[in-house]
Length: 358
Image (cartoon, rainbow, N blue to C red):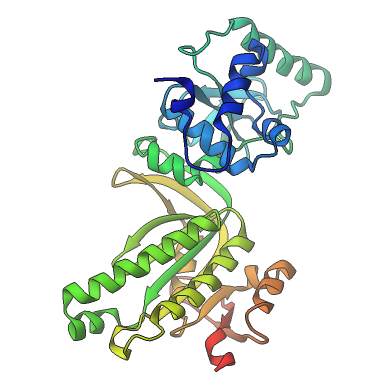
């Protein structure tokens, strides 16, 4: 298979330019490739370019490396070729400490040319490692993180990675932290009664069609539709503004989807959104998210009335999120409540765009 065919992923990236980059670049530029610099050079969207490289990893054009930095000195405490080899904790030989790995804090991901395409000299890795030690010896710190860094979270939250490399999961006894993620839960109003009224086949078709809308909107907002739980959907986002936008767009589009249908066939959603730290684990052979923030998001969704999006105070207090909300509604309803299993009372903010525009 020609090189171009191995990179031919749908999108706006001109694959011939990537092929030319591979063929014309000196060896040193193909070790730990700077995707952000490449995107800037050709005017590409970084997410689309990342998809090309993930597609290339799957087809043996590139290899992907995971590096686990000590959060104290920045040194690489461990390197792995796959996520499957990741561990919750690693040990830094320089600092003499154990540390927990967080996908959005100390885990870096690199792409290099695959040896089957071009075999690179070991000198590049030796020089790279030597530079790290020079930095640490001179400054007592290796400043590895910058605006061009690809973090582990960028890979985990990439839908193409999950689609093509679904077997890239953690060992059953391992977990990785995520310091900041935003969790969205949806549920259908009176779905059990809908199945009774319409029959299984008709009701399931409506539910399946609504899943397509939800999955599309979550992905368009750079989120991951993690799973369905009955008729409910769980989605996770890196960017909380995109999560809030996705929740509001889902309500708008599901309302459009139900327009013109008789009342028995209308889908009405209840949505809750919360942000916080989580852990990622392997469950049923797939990557899944757990922790107090996930439980809280589910509880918040349980407080939503039909047609509402309910946000936690952590999300509503952001001026950027309030600006997004302002595009849909002029006012929200505040609720102070103690939720089951949550130690402190929470302030929740209810958004119902249909009630206020009717």
